[in-house]
Image (cartoon, rainbow, N blue to C red; front, top):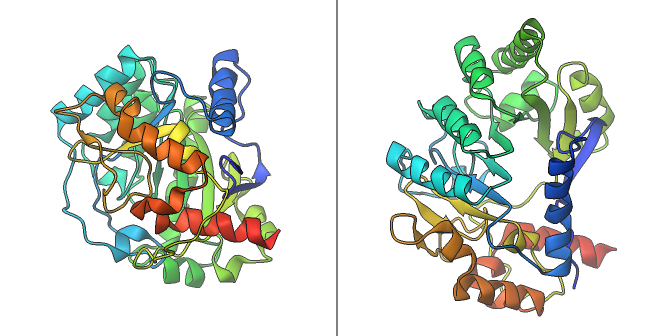
Length: 324
């Protein structure tokens, strides 16, 4: 079987924000790579993707959130505290306050970060379009102990950026990113580490160096993600492959209303385990249902899972394997 954790992600400048020197973090990242490659897990996931909200202030054409209709909402305090309390009891290594939607739209995001850090989570971060990354927000997130932040920004030219980040403003977001660096320098802190990342849109192919040159002195890492066909969550039904998804051995996702999912690509929630109000995260992770998903991937039968059969990540990875 072919298992390649994080193979759709590419650093092109700076130092990766997931490369750190402390032993505990290295142990976590070693498990991140080894567990999927050897088809083993511990008693609790390494990482959780927690969705503060599935609403977004932009309408990016390559994003699944743009093309799919969900019941919109914001995670309530009793839900995120329940999740983070269990995470703390099981010494969760890492969590990202992002799934679908823009996390900065949630009024309690900084409180969530602070609560997660108090619970003992080593690596707390989120992805953002940075439209709402103003001074008050930046200072509150630094005070909360945010470890890192990934900012999604297509390109380095206003016309290209605003073509893909529909509803955003190039100059405003560049200013916000500069303000984040300025405040960090003022406070003498290296955290949050900042990654700028783009989906590799056609206009940037062959121009990765120009993208890196534009951003290198503003952030800690410059990266790009493979572009996936998210529009309508296209159907790749019946493709059999020896590719197995790494996520099943690393993480779980939890939606704004507390629904537990096995990965961040089950956008229709077909594979859900239940709600945190009725099942623990640990029990979902160790359930027979999750074991069945892993077994099907491990034996080359992921195509028999409807959500995986339609997964744009799986389609991308299979295409790369066949190309090579």
